[in-house]
Image 1 (spheres, one colour):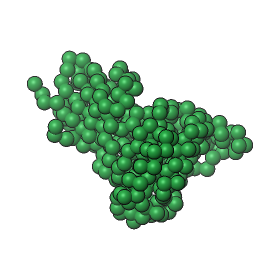
Image 2 (image 1 turned 90 degrees about the vertical axis):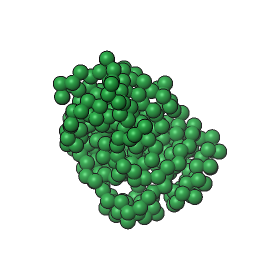
Image 3 (image 1 turned 180 degrees about the vertical axis):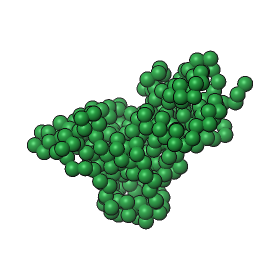
Image 4 (image 1 turned 135 degrees about the horizontal axis):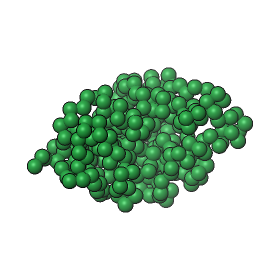
Length: 308
């Protein structure tokens, strides 16, 4: 029998998420600066008669086990493209917070693609895998690529970015999730309510911050902290006002920057160094404003096969 194959895939934080106006197709143009960080899911693909998904780890009960699971959809897409029977058991070990704005589902999709490609011997090219990733979701291509990158379009058109050092992060995980589509709808609603308008004709085209890109390139955490931004943060705070207390607790503990990660509800805190991250994490854990706290750093590589 063919040996199971395991892929390891990182979480991400958006150090800048600039959101354009609502397009006629219902999407928004983005300037999305991704940084892969060292919290990982593992996806193991093993031979099976039919496609099935099992999950273990943090919040495993919140992950769908049917064909709506992004990892299952990734396996089906690869099988269809190569005329392979989609018989595979995908076992996901979760360490990335579920529905937390850290691309856990997207990571699992990228991991499943890589693992199934190796298991089935489909020999898909990198470009082909990225094409399937983009069809699955806006964040999935970055989960495959990792490191640091600028995402254009819906976030799926990637340009790798140079980084000059390691950035230390603390993540405060909230109770429950936030629906990404709901956060985008609230962003549009808030823009309309402000009188500025929410359509692509009303909102300037999103652009990456030159200061932020320079800070990544030089590895300057203080400069990066001054430039981080998330256009979805007001919407996430509107839907989940308690997140303001989490952001305040991290800032009071000395975080260089405090922001909602992606569409939330996980909050991300940039620390000066590893010691600073420990201090921020301790204060957040004691603050009563979040469920759990995680310390990590980035950038780290994207999806890769591992021996288990």
